[in-house]
Amino acid sequence: MFVLSFTFITVVIGIVLLIVQINKRKELNNKILNSGILDVQALSTKKDWLEEDITQLESSKIVLESNLKQKRLKIADLEASIKKIKEDNVDILSLMKQVQDATQELNDLSDNKEQVEKELKQLKKENTHITTLISQSESIVAEIKTRQSQLAVLNDEIIQTKDEILLQSFGLYEPKYAFEHAETYVERLKDIREQQKSLVKNKIATSHKDTWQVDGSVQKGKVMNNNNIKSALRMFNNECDMAISKVTFKNIDTIEKRIIKSWETINKLNAPVAVEIRKVYLNLKIDELYLCFEYQEKKEEEREEQRALKEQMREEKRVQQEIEQEKKKIEKEERHFANELSRLNKEIPSEPEDKAIWEAKIRELEQKLALVERDKQNVFNREQNTRAGYVYIISNIGSFGENIYKIGVTRRLDPTERVKELGDASVPFKFDIHATIFSEDAPTLENALHKAFHERSVNRINYRKEFFRVTLADIKQEVEKNHNKTVEFTMLAEADEFRQTQKILEQALLLEEKVG
Image (tube, rainbow, N blue to C red; front, side):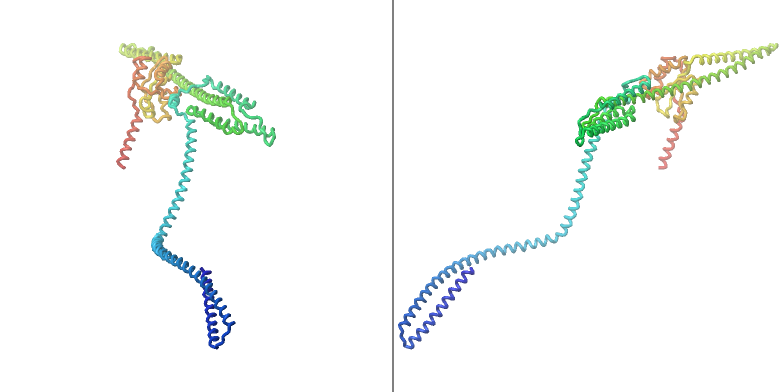
């Protein structure tokens, strides 16, 4: 556009200059005419000038027409542009209106910007907190899964079946060895442990590779392998020793499972180094477990037998002391009555009335002497017959509750003395006697009653405790069946101390309720 304008200006200037030149030539021509000078040469020159001017004018005309045409086109373009601009201006105004509206909306939104930023900040804080909680929850879930896995492992080690629990509750453990004496268990344990040592010594307690190399050295590989074997066996032995040391009747099955689990775990841990404890070694450890358990049971059984034997010896000693005391008492009475009878026989009065009284005293002394002789014979028989004694039926409601009875035997001359000893500091209340049954063979009668109520024994492990969950009527029926029907039973337990204690507690409770 700038070039066209420049060209147009140049043409205009050229035309102006041409016009100025023509005007000058006209002035010169007028001067010539006025002076009357006619010069052909001048005219010729004038003609040339005119032709030149015409040529220049025509050329300028052509250029000018071309420029005018271009200008018209340019004007048309400008008019079209102006029209377009006007149309665009309408759109611009509309856009400006929209911009104004948007600006107003922006201003309205800006008013809430601070509140939104605050809410956004709070939301970001909550989002951070939630992210932390999610992370913690994931950790907790992972921990729960770990604990569940551990719980599943532990559950495998617990005796869960009702049959096993029932067998344990009734004491129906089936011994694997059932040796008669504890010494036999000790010998068998030594043998089992020697077998274990032999397996370890001969390197057949484990299966392992002998081809390891460390830094290209077979010797170093051998040392490493031996260390791995020692480590595995030491770990397993320690686990077994700890478990076996805690074995009881209640947990023997659990301990066996724990040993097996330990064996599996240690083998799994040593799998990368190709060391595995053989099952034959595991079986020896399980044998050791049961031997140790049964050895402990047998030792306790023998200790119980020793306690029972010592108690029996103490009882026999007391019985013998009682017999000796009774013998001395009887001998003293016998001497007294005999001396008195001898004196009376020597001093019988002659008077009939006095003689009758004297003879009556003599007969009375003879009767007493006969009773003493009978007692003397009874004591002699008791001394000679060690099976003669009393079977006693006693209860202790305050200590053991209703329908729990102890059926025992004593050779004491006075069975109540033995019952008093049983009600010492070991129980809170004294025993009540329901029956004392004398028998020439008291142990046989006691054994018959124990056998009859075997399934109702309170202690299913130690039957020497002699307590039974049974009714007094059932006991009476068995006594009549095995002894005789003349035995007297006290059916109602006095339980005096217990009943008085209950009354005191009830009164205290009533007083407490009133105060409250």
